[in-house]
Length: 307
Image (cartoon, rainbow, N blue to C red; front, side):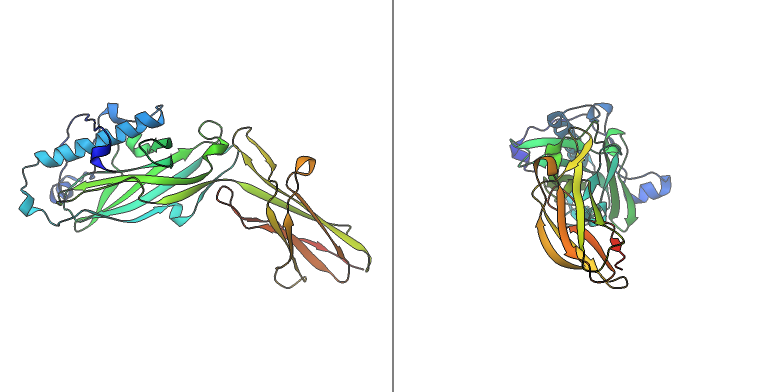
């Protein structure tokens, strides 16, 4: 997050305690922001502005601290272990609110003046930003970080994604994490993209093999439908022109792909259909590998009794 590229705002300065003082007081470590720095109910530009103002306050508090530069514990603040949902993409359906959890570790300084993570979508924060969301901790004026060792802090931020109020289909795909960490080290961390992650529209896939039972030598038709959440209509709809794999196994074996094809369009949106000749008892299922906007899914298998 280049400091020269955007105007910095300040919301007031708060003194942050170091590790030893916090241990004695039992308080947490982090940036204390004023109510004007919370982002509840604001647009992307204002949420970004408030995040930057909080970072500016932390920098100002650091500059005003009496501790001289030579006494700082390290040359650089280090942010490591940035994860979203434990390394997994976030999947949201049509009704239930999904909690997105971001974790990171800050080290390199014995005093943490501020660290917060925000999530955003777009090409860049200066001119191509589509969404910018501050965390629940930021909105609640709460510290996301706690001491976890010698000059080390563990941080956790959560974000609520409600499909009926917060999301449209355009929001599916790549998102980034904006993160800052300001300690008493000489160099701080401010980055627009500490991690890229994916927010996806929940998928579901069905399989039905019929008729069953079936006489040996007759035709079995395996029908399925691939659907995904539509965040504009809050319903599930067929996912068209997507590659799905028909997999088969014996009653006791493992599934293996036997053919692949694309789902239908129009009145057959998301539908897939294949036929097989009945030879012996067998189980069938469809499997979808997923895309950047939709998670992978495998249907529940359907076994056919051949007589």
